[in-house]
Image 1: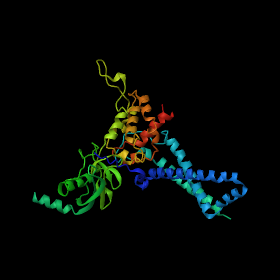
Image 2: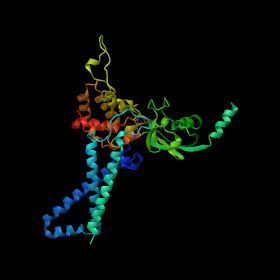
Image 3: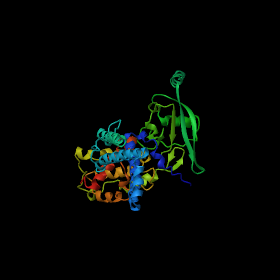
Image 4: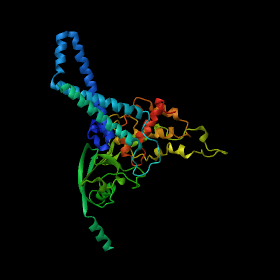
Length: 143
Length: 249
């Protein structure tokens, strides 16, 4: 008999809001992680250009001084701040800290692990990342 | 009798479009949606609507159900894109004129809305879901283990699992990793690890401490969002990881 595994695959990343802010946070953590990895590779490529002489290094550095370069750097700031702040929350949560205490569940069964403290931390991570991006924009585009 | 029938018809004024995913992997791996207009009341569940279709419009719809009261865990399916128990989801709560039902993701489809839960039962058994204690053998001059209410509270929430499989269906790791143990099994491991009568903690921690084991959980929390019994698998898994990381003894 043929088996259709029906695995959701990468499509499962679409529409994270259907499972609440925690799934959005998971989605953002993944995206920012990949974004930071891409930045790291680009950064290594950029800085290694110094091996080809000062003129190559200067021209490479000019790329970050363009409008597109500033936008990319601002995104990197946002990704880095969100990934760090949310990562600290997850480091505690992964050790069972801040996920609530087991108790007899009562209808309508609001999960303790999705408590207000965790939600606030997620919103704070997004908020701090947004503030850092605004600061980055003001520095990069400011006079 | 005639009066009763007429009043039922009058009160069934509201209808929804029920879209049922139909597929038969034996013949074709593709899935098609069949649409039906179904009357509903404030109390009509998704399972009631499916059975209405099965009774009056298309008896070939394959659906698994048993208790109709969220106790057996048979009727898990994807309802408007989110896993849920069909018998525990009222149509009026969905706030939609179109209700789409599909088989749960991350399980092989048997037919239409029926999925094969064998993989989940296998990982569940792998967790040794029983008390491991040499002194638990029933013999003369023995009696039951006594526990304080506090000791019971440590695990009772996790023993409410009805093995419906919704948590595994919602899990984003299960969506891409076919070898992942899954939130259902990991939570059951915690249920026994947290039970002070059990002496099999090290055995179970060894089973889950592998590359496709507990470390693949990233605390997306979707398992807890969809659990119809308030088990909160996400909490159980993080607590269990606390043992491995040395935060808990």
